[in-house]
Length: 98
Image (cartoon, rainbow, N blue to C red; front, side, top):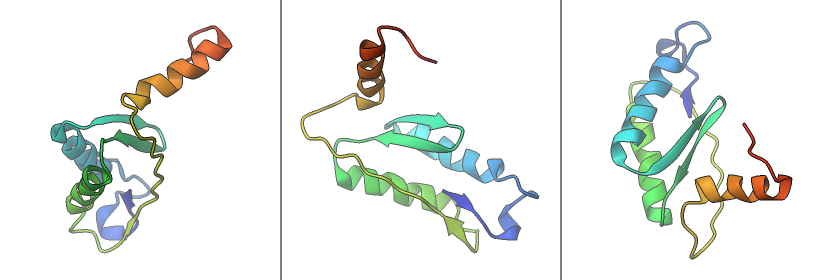
């Protein structure tokens, strides 16, 4: 999620506004992982996930236009998937990955 309108960009940079979103997610207490091209969140319910998305949009309320790309991977009765999915690949490879 990032602003596309000129009043919320510094040239081609959107880090100022993305930082607002990350700060809000961090303060929310949900598990997340910031990556160079997006942020992954982990919640127990769809309602909680949608609340985080709404929280993120609130951080960009002053921006005329916002782009967002969402993906959902729902697996019931599983927790800590941010770490266990990576551990599963490392187990197959028999080594740690970067």
